[in-house]
Image 1 (tube, rainbow over the protein chains, first blue to last red):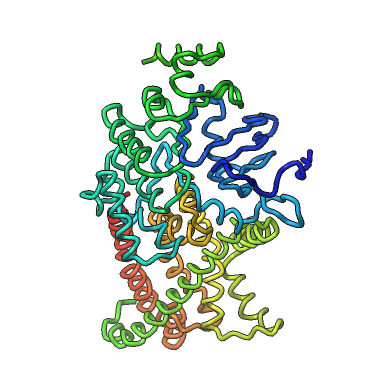
Image 2: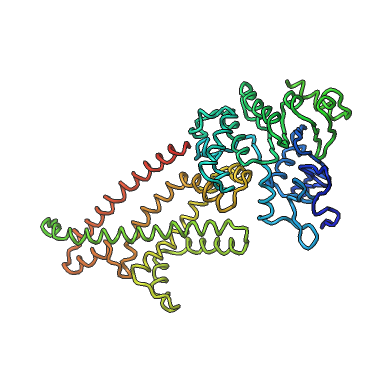
Amino acid sequence: MTEDMSQYPLRLEGSNIPMVSFKNVRKSYGPLVVLDQLYLDIDAGEMVTIIGPSGSGKTTVLRMLMTLETINGGVIYVDGEPLTHMEKNGILVPADVKHTRRIRSKIGMCFQHFNLFPHLTALQNCMEGPVQVLGISKKEASERSLELLDMVGMIEKKDQLPSRLSGGQQQRVAIARALAMRPKVMLFDEVTSALDPEVISEVTGVIRQLVGAHNLTMLMVTHQMGFAKDISDRVCFFYNGSIEEQGAPSKLFENPERKRTQQFLNAVLEAN
Amino acid sequence: MEWRWDWTWELVPRFIDATGKTLVAAGGGYAIAIVLGLVFVLAQRTPSRILAFVAREFVELIRSTPLLLQVFFVFYVGPQFGVQLSPWTSGMVAIGLHYGAYLSEVYRGGIESVPKGQWEAATAINMSMAKTYYRIIIPQALPPAIAGMGNYLVGIFKDTPMLSVIGVAELMHTANAVGSQSYRYLEPYTMVGIIFLVISLPTAFMISRFEKWVRRKMGM
């Protein structure tokens, strides 16, 4: 099944273009459709949270945006330019490595299991990208990284290997590592799910700081409903591969319109 | 027949010389194998299906045929295709090819032991594929591969006698030469056995120490 790519603009234009835009995005694994006809725009500086039952495709949204998953239809735009595609002879074709890397440089991601580089210290983890990818000097990368490690409260552990750090500490280093690349968009994929309950606030506290201090666009998948309600500008409830309901957190958490949203929220409340 | 100490001592300088040559042959072959193994494993992992297929079949071919045959091929068949190599070079190339194929499997195991999340984290900081291998994956793939790499180092050392058949003056070649001159084989062959033991055993021990040290150093 080939898609008519001429229906998609080569780039988004206008005065108020979204930072991230999913247009008619489809993802399937063989016959299993994970996401279908996904349309989602995220404005610059907006904090959007995705909630939903497991298997609803919410993590896939983040992974597609980070280019960890290919898409099977539609186009994803970042900062007005296509991420998954590029222009060739006036039409969009699948992006090559060079184009992917250029657009991807605007995106950073933190993972559920931290994925720090185990052979590098906390500081080296943060410096790796700036030095090896951005090509800035070690001195400058080190200054930038130390500043970020300080912000996440990990400056004292800067010379420790990840194996010597607790989960919460590793996740804070991972946030610093991602920020050291100066992304415009940050993705948080269940960053507190692998943590012990008492250290969750270490990590959510850092993310709260980001909301206030940086002009970052953030997209987060989480099971921490209270946290989502506190800090999100908008919450999207995913069900079965599409957005069932979205809106301001006060609206979605207190007055959900859809029955499935109500059921999900009730089930989560019950579990807590 | 009794052991002749006086003659044994007389032979020592020749065997020391041959030991040096054996170590050079093993070391040279190992160096080639280490690099070729990496080439083989990376070729098998490229997006190019043709290259991956050719590399995989080539590794299979080498692993399924005897080293001795490969030594003969490089030394005797090579010249017919215009590749004329000295016995020394032929021997090292053959060993390098043979063990490169085995080492590529060791590397593959090491690379596959690196969690998928490491690749993803490298993508998330926008690393190129080459740097992802060089900076992130290979450093982590190495410690689990050290044991296997060490085994093959000892294996190469023990396989150097095969090079005697194309006239490389390593230990076995020397022992044969001494034996056929004097018709006494007890001392030279025993010495060869002892020399192999004296080198192999500590090497294996050092490798396992080294592996533990690397793992500790890398926080694994």
